[in-house]
Image (cartoon, rainbow, N blue to C red; front, side):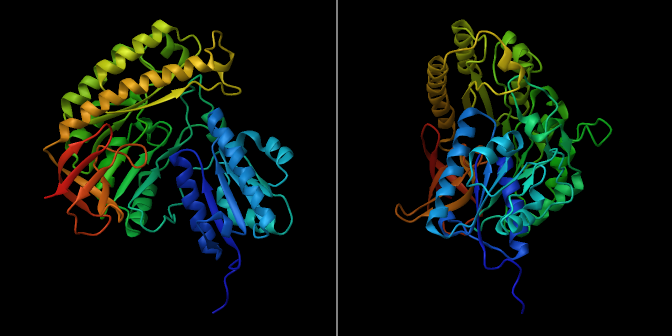
Length: 448
């Protein structure tokens, strides 16, 4: 049998940033594997390294640049021949990367990663390829991905880009306008993932609740998508991320309440509680709308876990605003909460606003808010003690002789876990576990 093209090269993909980058990396991995290159996990073993970057906030940009420089040092070992940079950072700062980091041998933007094997070939041939065009890729024709062995949960990107124009956000500059995939394309990808042993899919988009309006005559199609996905053999859990509150309809709430495969988990980034801050952010609705929506969701889906993310230190946020935001968090009692300090992004309207907040004040407020949430989360978690919950078992920790998994109320990597004793089945299966202990973010229990 003839040797595949490129089979002598070993390729490592280093992924930074959000789940959307993970999806892009999986798709690049599939193309690289098809081409005949050998995929390796350890960059030190690789002759080609791809760094899939994030360019959203200052800390993420700094992490991306540091990782590129770290990978560039591997050229000194003699193994690394080509360093390719992909993702959001290249979409915004391609000239800076090429001019200031000579170790980089090629770059690819967010809309061109399907050309990754050609970029590798050109970079190995001594060229310095640049594939950064308009970020208009739709994922419509690409459903095959290579997920790592031993993975039981995967993200599916149901739309790309965003039209909401929040004043603090640079994502439209890096990912373009909002564009949905067809239901058929998403279903095909879900079947492909299920065939690889995936049992949980997490749906992601910049604005998931707006799904379908651009390609289905203005109709909000997320409820139908969730119901159709629940028919895919092998998929047991469907999780929804980044639900824009302005499009959270009664039909969608009904789907959460009635479809057993849809996780009772709502990830709805609210960003702030105070009306004048929301207006400055150009966010939809006001605090009274948020409170009504949260009350309606909890009334119709009583066991729901609510997750949100908030920004502290937005330009114009006073101590009084932050105090009211803190009271809002205590009052609503979110199950899960992420806090970000405002990052001043180039070319965004918020960067031109007056009354910016000092960095040390932002950090102090973020820490105070997370301390409030730590107590709330621990109290919310305690309600599960004595209950029998479904737990997706994902790994075994031999040192402690215990299995570790998650409930439907916890998203992979960002939320808590369940430490399970008495499990005898296969990894990737869902077990009935009686919860015996609760902690601030995690649980422990025994198989029944």
